[in-house]
Image 1: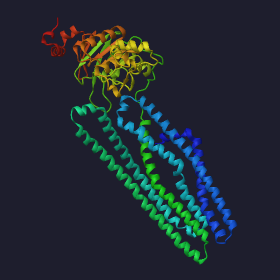
Image 2: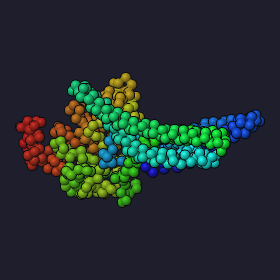
Image 3: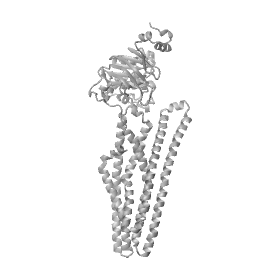
Image 4: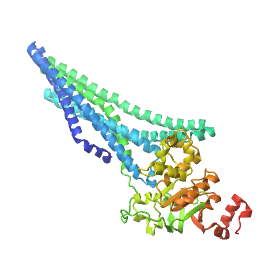
Length: 576
């Protein structure tokens, strides 16, 4: 939690000014009842108009000063709160960008979105209120009690009974409310998660007629949020009558004993009026504590959630042995007894893999679902680190490369293509900083998408809907491939990225890639695609069963022959 509020350090001057202005307002509020009592004793009771005018003028002047201080205070409070929100969102985004997949798995997408929006806003509002009114409330209580003792010790003794009781009660409410608001924020995460899943899968929901089912899921999440929120707010609001009851009892006591002392002649009328005013101000400040507890409890819960992200240790960073400007030159890859287990799991997905890919070689990887093909891909650009074994590129351990230079030399097209909102040209150019128009067009031609783009009304300026909703699966795949090709990578990895293409388009695409890129690894389920590669790797349950040319695998692998038979017929499943 402390880490979150360190972002306020750069706003020391605005905070100092805001608090200085707050204390001007506070001083005025504490002086006005005293001057009112003097005006009554020296002016009203004595029927001295000169004193009435004097004290009245002083009070009006102080009220105007407090008004100006309040306006300026609001400006600095708003500046600090908004600046804090901007800074912490920037830092959160920077931190999340540095996360590895293992880090991201600890925070669901819905939870991250809630932290960026709802949690930051809660703290932002609390900071504004802290600079504007929160700090004034406790000092008004303390100052009011002190001023009451200065005016009349006997009447002020009542405060020594009521105020400590109220402080203890408020601290208990604050502690309990913090835990309750943490549950509220978790419920907000659940609602966001259901909403995101529904928006992303709307076509599937309609196709499977699952509308009522999804409405039920949302109703459950929404009801949980409403229930815990209602319970929390009821608890907070229930504290308000208790606070006011105790303060009203003290106010009645002051009026009762003040009247007795005034009649007895031991206390001036003005003193009683001043004490009553201080009691009312203390009551008003106490009543603000419910609002303050509400805001602070939510802010504390939100700050802890933000701290979880900010203090999360990034587990994939440049190795100490990394050479600063070392870049991939040839794209030669070697795995030596590599095994991998996903974080927080027990089942190995890759087991003692050993193979060598020459520079410029085209390797096809085939295997059943869950055989570890995509996991193997994620180890090469260090999206995850292997648990054991050694991976080298250009005969150097991949840890010798900085993450930046390692990934700059790799073109990676994931299994599910992701496009960003914006123009088609922007999505292709996303793969390379400062890409020229000629490079964009050439990458599109190599990916066999140029003619399709040119047939669109706005051509390369055509806007892509969210996640490419206005494009076909094959078009999205080819734009994703163009995005990888534009950087002319030394290593190109295609994770089943041609599955939506027809055979002719796929053949032209692979021919263009073959002549224009370095080492290529392609995951595929289609033997027709694998036949275009120099060698084929066969994976099963994370183990390397065989690697070789098509002819070599036909001669040595029963599983490969079965795959051939399933796709082309038994007559093709034998060596020539």
